[in-house]
Picture (cartoon, rainbow, N blue to C red):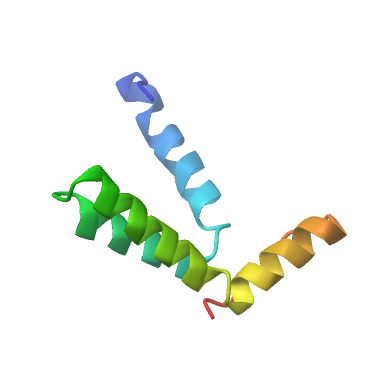
Length: 80
């Protein structure tokens, strides 16, 4: 997203507000996958992403996210 210098801080603050709503565990794993696969071929990165997703599906945060969606409420993530 490209914004003017005067809009930068507000745009960053909005992005931070959005990111803190997500599972900290999922964010940490996503960052690790991105960093680890940065210099890898696409196929390797996709395999890493698939394994990470499989792992994340077994977490309490994943269950909480699904439950919150079904119940139409905001999730409360614990990072577990």
